[in-house]
Image (cartoon, rainbow, N blue to C red; front, side, top):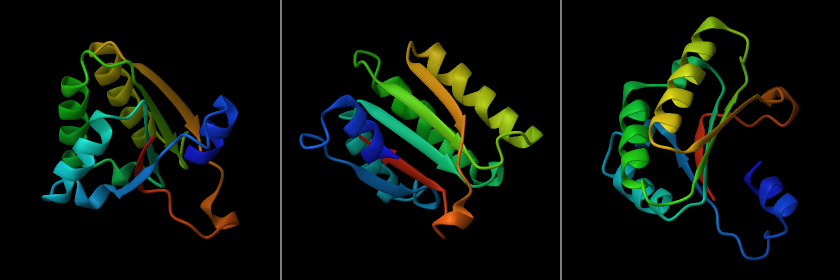
Length: 126
């Protein structure tokens, strides 16, 4: 998805991406993800289920948004279970947090991970 966005913007040859497992955001690796994200133009949260929208991820996102007050960034949320109530609550949290920090937030359903066998519980910074 991150590569597709970069390609659409015509910057795929100038773009670096980093991929972080959301389960690591509450660990010291979360600081490294925060450093990557503080320089990012786009952060994509891709979750297979709303269960992946953990307290650690919420805390990390709020910190990231607070540290990017002067940067122009966008937050993209991708949920495989887009229509489930838990996903709606997670999307609402992301929208409130992003808009409260003056950032853009985009939500969309993910294509089924069954097609490519890859899970969607990741954070990309682009």
